[in-house]
Image (cartoon, rainbow, N blue to C red; front, side, top):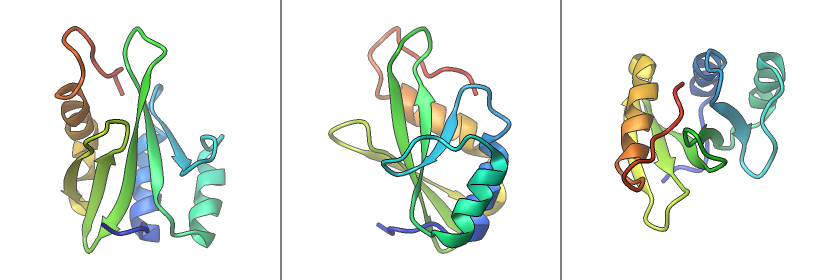
Length: 118
């Protein structure tokens, strides 16, 4: 597994996540970015993985998805469970991240629990 994210992938991810009212983007072990501009400045000087904070609907729970690059693919790894799951999405298909991440996480949640809408 790669331990970095390409700047182009990170900037594209920032644009996509910025459209969400519930999901948040943040560097590992740091609070979420407060603005798209702050996120852009960060990724211009850091190539470390980013994380997506994905809340569980009607709950205070959330899950964390780590995002790295592997060639032209972005790798989304659920790090909230003991046994992480992973999906790869080609960078040209990033519009699929909402449905792909939601499916990956919902498959692991207990019955009756679902990920909050994007």
